[in-house]
Amino acid sequence: MFFVWSCDPGNISSSEHRSRPASTKFLLAPLLSLLSFFFSLHLPHFTFKMAFGKLYGLPDNGRTISVLVAAKHNDLDLELVNTQANSTAEFNSSAEYLKINPTGKIPAFEGANGFTLSEVIAIAVYVTSQNEKTTLLGKTKQDYASILRWLSFANTEVLPKLAAWYRPLMGLDAYNKKTTDEAAKTALKALGAFETHLTANTYLVGERITLADIFAASLLTRPFATVLDKTWREANPATTRWYNTIINQDSFKAVVPSPQFAEEVIKYVAPKKEPKPKAAAPAAAAPAEAPAAEAPKAKHPLEALGKPTLILDDWKRKFSNEDIRTVAMPWFWEHFKADEYSLWKVNYKYNNELKLTFMANNLIGGFQTRLEASRKYLFGAQSVYGENYNCVVYGAFMTRGQEWEPAFTVGPDYEGYEFTKLDPSNEADRKLVEDMWAQDVPVTVNGEVKEWTDGHVFK
Image 1 (cartoon, one colour):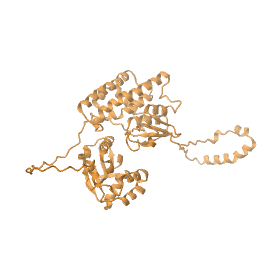
Image 2 (tube, rainbow, N blue to C red):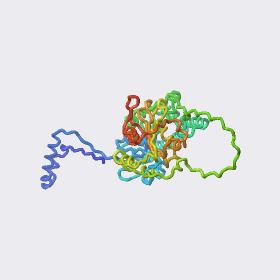
Image 3 (cartoon, one colour):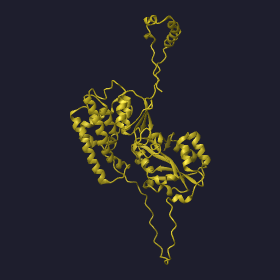
Image 4 (cartoon, helix red, strand yellow):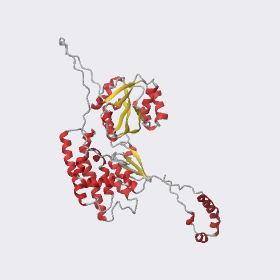
């Protein structure tokens, strides 16, 4: 909770003392003496604040960034609750979150007073309007309408078209070269409206920064880091000048200290495939026999193993609802059966090719999304450690059975990972599992300590 205490005993004048009843003077005298002594100590000024509310979103999500910057500009304290940009994720589809945002999407706002709000434009305007003297919403009704126009244009016309361009290149959506190239042309045409306007104007609305500038620049942080490369920036100097102006404001830098700029448009990299051994020459055909009746096929290869004594859903609930280190992990080791499940270190093979940490985290998200068919038989966590242009993807999983292939080959990305079986009786291996799942300690790679940056839990 946010308390602000500011007391200046000098503001209590002698005339105010005289105007009070004698009984009040009598009661105030000891208090004033105590306050006078307190302030004579020259103690530092303490300020206690209560958060204005919670914002559900991601720190690298453009829509989330726009609200956080608006809050910083108005000196409002918003608590960011990391929430996936996936409406089908466990938390997003929970009754708790659907009360806040019925679509399960991000961002969503929950005020300290219980007021909830979804839809990013509504949240951004609400947060900005908390300062009655703000200039971010313009001076006139015409200004305000123009600001809303730019907010809507950036959110519905520009960002979706840009996302259709960069998401497939990042491996977040299915890639088709023709479709992606068409999306790039459509996105660049929409962006042309910024260049035309900003060639003749310093800001989007009026002669000073407004919410329109903050909002639009926030939504463009990922495009500038992925597809709006040096060539594009040189061809669009007005938009580039404006973007640099906005991201270098103190309120913006407090949220995004170092926005990234792509030197060239990122390139789609198909998942690498390991060469498969050539099949042996077929043996001579045996005499034909009457075909035997085929047994019904299991829906998943691991279904044939039957029901284990450790029910995976029980463990997932324990992991989600209890402290991981002190409660969940002791429970796990007590109930883990090495003949029912196996543990695997799962590290990305091509860490030397990783660039931006948010892209590495999206790589994890895509990998885990495509493991959906094995969700009943898998649990694990993967994380990004390090910083931009110097990061790795490490993780650990538990799978039903003693081999990793049945659970992981349901998706196409497994060939990009190295699977190493762990020994649950080995203390070092147990510690690795706990560290990977708790996601609260760094890793050491070739003698270099890399701090935990972000990650995903598959549960």
